[in-house]
Length: 270
Ligand SMILES: NC(=O)c1ccc[n+]([C@@H]2O[C@H](COP(=O)([O-])OP(=O)(O)OC[C@H]3O[C@@H](n4cnc5c(N)ncnc54)[C@H](OP(=O)(O)O)[C@@H]3O)[C@@H](O)[C@H]2O)c1
Image 1: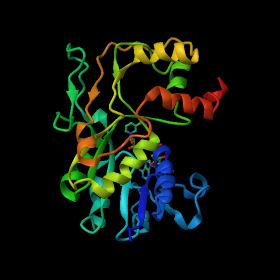
Image 2: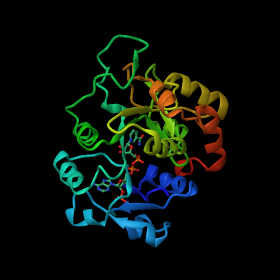
Image 3: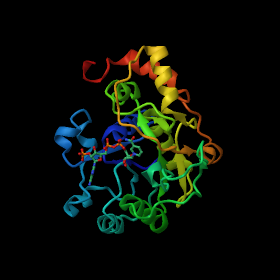
């Protein structure tokens, strides 16, 4: 029998994880700082109050349950103090990091930018990277360095409609929330403790390409956004594919966007 699973921080990804884990037959508990309001749609016996900043809530995390940590692991002192209360040798833990951990290539003139794999340098001046590395090195956490998350309600076409992004040669890496949730569960089962894995759909695209396709395929007109001349990053997912053997449900961004557009009206009704 699988151990119960705790989704630590049930925001956008956490709620998809709760649903996916439950569908896979696991007992999944979701945490929130305000469970009564934020987790109203989750059965009451599966809701837990947890706030990293409130040590009095740490005891609400059951012993022996696996953990998927879905908010930035910071500040370091709180992360360390909380982790010491967990028997991390008796449970498996996945921590969601970000591809922003990789040192910015904004000053590089190389274009297209070279591929970034898990051995590329990370920026240890970033507080969340310190927290993630502590959990990975000292507690055997499996750290997923996650690309931009999209899905229903987080629609890149809406980012274009509202000028939150702009057409440029900059590369962006994206991952559908459903694939991310399934990868978290797979990493919990098959990932090697203390390892990190990049998580993206494996196809970095430039914003120019996404804009052109958005216009041709969905007639999305661009509004003026802030200009960005940096090359961006190209995230390699070779390790994810070879070691975890994940098969993507949404490997094609544009097919996934078709589905999202058909499911929901654009954000803010625009
Ligand atoms: N969004 C992206 O494109 C992206 C890209 C790469 C990596 N990531 C990372 O992936 C993870 C999941 O992203 P997401 O966008 O799904 O996150 P999200 O929607 O912001 O959800 C995280 C949830 O964690 C809870 N939380 C925040 N601070 C907490 C604290 N100090 N103690 C306890 N709970 C806390 C909050 O829920 P309550 O308010 O209910 O407590 C929050 O809704 C995050 O670590 C994020 O930084 C995100």
